Image (cartoon, rainbow, N blue to C red; front, side, top):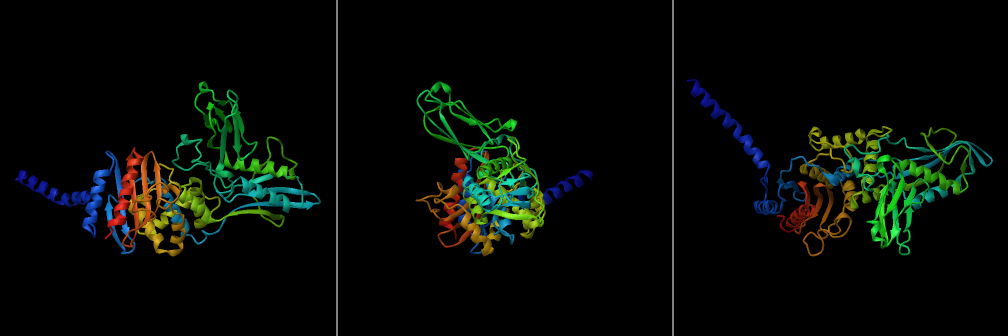
Length: 491
């Protein structure tokens, strides 16, 4: 009798377990679709072109017909790389204050008597990631032109109180330094915290010529590079970043002009040092300044003794365009920071303020935020985890709001035309000028998500997230083939 009961129990357990197992299998392959011919075509592309040992998640939604078109492991969590910028952009665009420009301001605080300011001069940072060398010169010139003094009895001060003191994103790789794509984050940025080092040959055997821009005494240059001396070895341009040193070291053999970029430690000090020395060249001096201490940092306490002297503004759309077209990480973190400020009003902004805004939008769209992880705004973090269906959900939300979509659409790279898609989906392919999408890649990860217009006139939102793929070329080939198939065969 016990054996009979045991056997019946096993049968019952198997009967109960079977539907759940079948559900898992269905979600791991192409889902049931309105058009089985398209599903079969896309399934065959995945089967034939997915790099061995790798994974992919795909979601496609027909925005014109308002229906899901294709899914393949669409709910699986993936690291998004730079497709994280889509989430950041859409969440930021949903805030009513998005269009406010990024501002960098110069204020004086104190009494002015004759040619002397009895007080301090402040530069208030607004996290403008596009402020470059020329913009800094304009800001300095405007300050000197407006200021009715040439002597400051106090200090020249930087106000970086907009943001907390964390200058890296959570989950960023420490050894990506000193690469220019990983900047030091601060509300005061000059040239993205990056210098451009140009190396040119001289006479054979002589030391090569080195030029660094923006020009500043904040960094030093150690040049041992030689002109057409093969024994000097390959050209190297670096700095001792593990020591937080800003000595730029150039060595090796130089046979032709080459340009390299490096980030500097730290962005806010680079900005303030260069601002103070250029202000001095315009005839405004701080009496408390020393060669080793041209400036310090303190928040501006606005009162009746404060006067605004100069402002530099950069439009939010310009920042968004660079963020999406060129996949600029600094711009994404600046937009992410402002998202937190606009959403919570909290100063200094903390990462969790921006994350809160993204999570609330996820919930608004019907997703459980606990099922995903957001650690930064640009996708450099290895702690970010999203899914294709979540990305498509954000894209659908943006498409449904003309104010959001018009700005996002303008900023996205266009297949075969510009940005990170300039050399993909080009002339001769069905997708040429029909795909508006964000790329995302680092080692092992390669993604593409955005919009495309099929030849039948329908607009689609899609996300393809390749994971554990060591060949970026093969991952991109699959993504491009899927786009081409959707353009031609959308029912």
